[in-house]
Amino acid sequence: MIKETLDVIINRRTEDVFAILSDLTNRPKWEPAVVRTKKISVGPVRVGTEYLEVYQPILTERTKRTIVVAEHDLNKNISYSYEGFSPFTKGTTSIRHTFVSHDDSTELTVESKVALRGIFKLGDPLVAFSHRRQVKRACDSMKKLCEGDPRDDRYYGYSSLPVLSDLSKPLTPDQQNVLLELYKEICTSTLRRKSTGSLNH
Image (cartoon, rainbow, N blue to C red; front, side):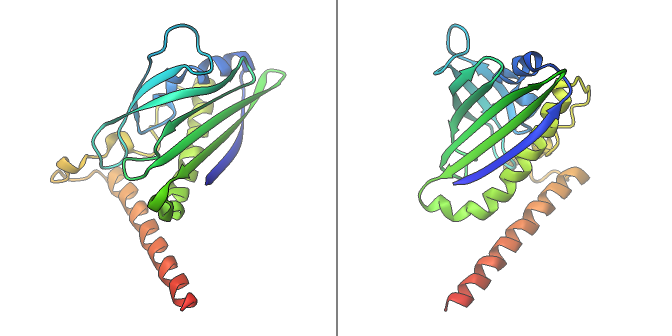
């Protein structure tokens, strides 16, 4: 199980912050790999409400997944889950947002868990690195969104990266930097595993 918990202070009333972040159709505004999130259940948001989400992880084609709301307590918390972390892994991702009011500001706690299954558990170190970055930057984007920052930095660059069929096209400097960071982490993880294996023999 990969877990990440972060706190962020948002300078806006809790009622407003909850209204924005509990509306999961806003997920593309803080999750860079998400292209579109659409509510498919009828009626107000409650436990069991479902959303259909289209997302495009790095270097892959667009994929669909279903998000299910597991908890919804007005102005206090919302949690939801979906299958998978990326097209290359199998498991469940669970996210919980907790809201605490402080006068005219809100303390937001984001808890995110990824439970990989089967052989995919071997990818825990690399997934944990990517997951940690995503949660941190998602929190930054949530803060900007709720505080009315007009910038949409799509921080991780997923939306601008080419899919595999487009790799014949030259990469932009931002795309090169993202791929270089991922390549370095893969090499580091591989060397770490080899070193651990040598010590065990």
